[in-house]
Structure formats: C-alpha cells, structure tokens
Amino acid sequence: MNRFNNFLDEKRVHLAFKVSLWCKGVFALSEIVAGAATYFLPPQLLLTFVLWVTKEEFVEDPQDLVANFILLAARSNPIL
Image (tube, helix red, strand yellow):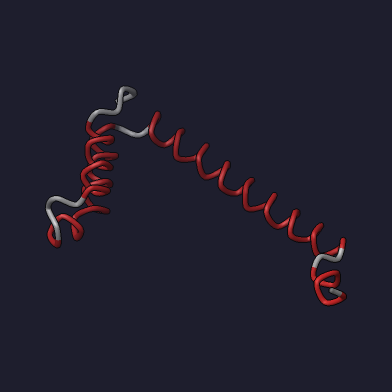
C-alpha cells in the first residue's frame, strides 16, 4: 500500500495534470490552425492535400473507410 501511495504522490499527480493540460492546449491550438487553414486556403489546395495524404491508402485499399470519409469530408466542406 505504501508503494501505491508513493505513486499517487501529490507532486506526481500535479505534474501529470500539468502535462495533460499542456497537451490539451497544443491540441486546441492545432484545431484552431486547421480551422483557419480550411477557411483561408483555396478549396482546390485543400482537396489536393487530402488526395496526397490518402493516395497510398487508396492504392492499397480503394474501399478504405477512413480514407473515403476524409475525401468525402474535403469534397463536401460547406466552407469551400
């Protein structure tokens, strides 16, 4: 039980909290950047990027669920 208490030491829990908070902040910042890029970049550039990212997956499996979803989302983006 003493070993478990050392693992859950207040300093370690606080450090884990800080690290998770920084990770959440970085993720939120990446979402903001991605949203701004989607809004300001030309639609053809975004579609070209999506095709470039998913190209190898479509060669391997043309029916890939994730790759098809990403491509459909890029094609039907209401902002574009």
